[in-house]
Length: 335
Image (cartoon, rainbow, N blue to C red; front, side, top):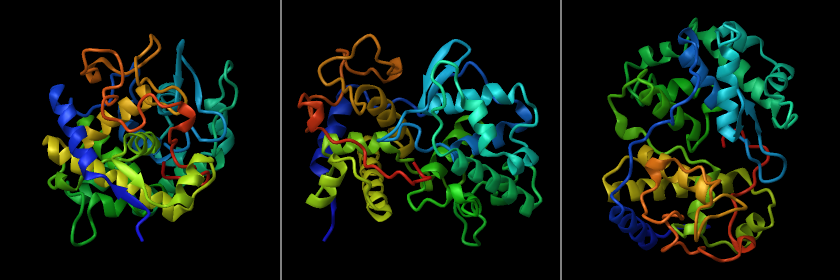
């Protein structure tokens, strides 16, 4: 018996609500104060997406710190601190650097005088980066761009030489739900590095914010009482349960994208920004967004500053202690 259901009626209701506010903005990263040095830019993005996991774990401190006077958290800090360091150390993200990086070095980079050491899985992250370097070494390449050249711009190829197939030779990009792969492909396209001849295969890179948001909305529903109990109790779920939930969320996003004549990547950025800023784990903005809400202005489609989904969400205005949180999988390297 299936443990998870995609509620198509709720997806239709959600799509109609979004249409009333004018649709979905384009998918893109927010402007950044720093950029990777040109000679390692593609390797830099590839490497940072590879270790983009467990930045705000269900149990334990969130990754956070300051870069040039700005407080950052999660992916923003992971990325911006690395870009800052790469502009100081020109060897960073070269093949040789990737092959030799270690956990101690990563802890040094991400240690913050105000927040301390909040980098989880330092050893795992280092091993994933080393694996990228060894992949380049085996291939005789210096840059991940050579994977793109090998693929001739195809995500999938019948001869196994598509980008998805080549990058799956590395541990970080072997996720069955392909979260990191899809995120990387969207970034590389939006940065102007890569274009795809079969972009139909580019789907949504489902992360934990989207799992939490869609469980709260009701677009994805749990049919298994034992699984629901584990999630609400912040207990670890199995790898298979994790995969099934993320697949269901991905399929729901693909369906909603189809209803809105948008791409799954556009819907990912739309949902990720809303769920991260307006429907966080502990401070959802069902009735109104306070001054601290960091939702980018291009996503503020509603005339009132509150969660755009509040009128149709199954969880709106219930006590936060009764709301779903994202599933806990402490050992994952994929989200």
